Image: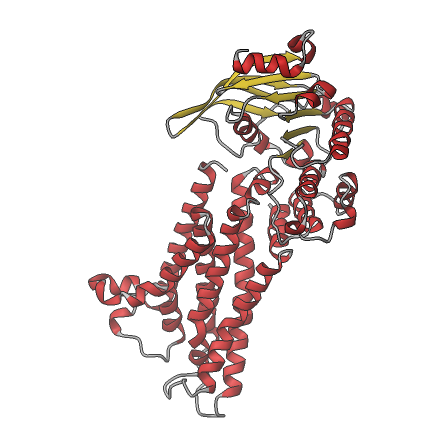
Length: 244
Length: 240
């Protein structure tokens, strides 16, 4: 497994567009949070931590789209043929891809979250906001990893960078946008969606009671991770069974 | 790979059948390719050559039957590129990755030393353009890179699907010499090509596939008799 993982990481670092995509994704969250904080968008009830998380949707989208396009690009560029010839055991290939994307997303998300917190703390007026609970930003890391894993799986399933990127955008934005249509499912679907998981964990922002996941932020995060795992398993089964 | 392991390595396809969307593209295909021999795998376009080669490599799944390399399915080998190297298309390298980067990925995936990348680049004659993105390479150069990908693990078995595409006359002769030398060194070479003159020039065995079925398999000399490869082949697949 380790050589395959090394190869997957090398694939990303040897194509400029791919490592640049990861770098841009890493900057997306702190950049948006900085913009919000610098323009007075952090509310009186917000903490430095919740202020730092205001750019989390940008981070989720950027990492998810990056993962989806990297994975689907294997098919779009026909490089999957060489991948399957050199690592023909598909479970190992899939595991290596999952680990590579997950590791890069986790590392990037951690840097994103810490940078965003420091930037927002530096920009906000001294003493105007409580620091909040910085450890809650772990939810940002978890949500970004979940969306990246989902993006990777969808990328391999669809084989199309454009289609998989669109699916990621829908998966991140649609639950909240369609909240009114969900009826009794709203607290389950919106509550466990990545953006809302972060909001529940960091607090501060106003979240309608109907969108609070039953059982709290930890249960919401666990459900989000279970959904990402289920999609990842679907991707694995498809890769194991399909031709090419 | 030791000489003993190399001798044991061979390609065996047994009763391979592949049905895609209700269409039988391979119908009970059976043949083998032996160590020390260059086996030409020929047939008209759409006869099932590439599907067979992809099935041998585990890229496509067979509906029934079995294909093995070195006595077991290709995917079951721990370091597959040391067992079999394959060229299926010259366009399987990312256009924005350099030739060196591409081979580095292949080497890393099978825990090969970094020196194997330089050796492969030298062997296929593209060391001078190793830093060039694949997308900026000519078809011939990409074909050489694909050959380098196949040869990087010094494998006992080579599976090549139309490796002559895009090669100039000098490169075709170079490939002939290289493949003959590899077979003489005990390796198994399975080669799909439409170049009948090349088959006559250096192949030992011929397997003819037509409409998903093996039409003939045996030594080249027996196949062509006193005629030319082209005549005998066209007689077989076009009925005269």
